[in-house]
Image (cartoon, rainbow, N blue to C red):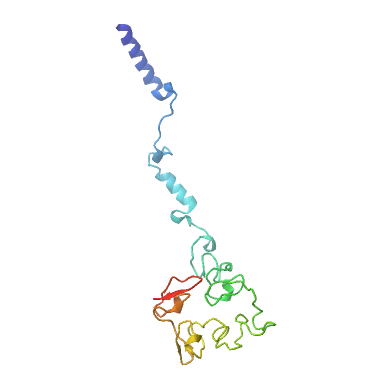
Length: 204
């Protein structure tokens, strides 16, 4: 009985000196929230990570034209406007210079210049809806008439059909009312074009 007692006591002394983990070859458990061993539940590591990666959203000190956000006067995310590179086809635009193709369509989206002649010149086939000239039966530059897209507001018109908003008053196209087709918020009296995309939406 005494030998069992002394054996147990010796084993207890050995464990207290070396530790269970070392004796059994087991790595001690570490709290993931305190992985850096600072006792601050990982807050220091997060602060360092935020400082390096820019904190929430990862924007940090990223240049405006590469931060993944549409800001400043960009016409689409990280492109267009006066400071960023021109946008690729399909991106939103406001003016021709917003687009690589230098063609901002009536839908206010950068579009390929396929079939478009140099602005100010008619192609071999005659007038087109992309030659930057009011010709053919267009009521304003490259819009209206029987062939081209309807004109946006403040453009010249002769009939309601010449206007995207469906209303021609005193030969000027007006903004669209509720339910009228639109391609951008700027096409609507309410300032809201619901579901606007390549196929257009409807004014609210």
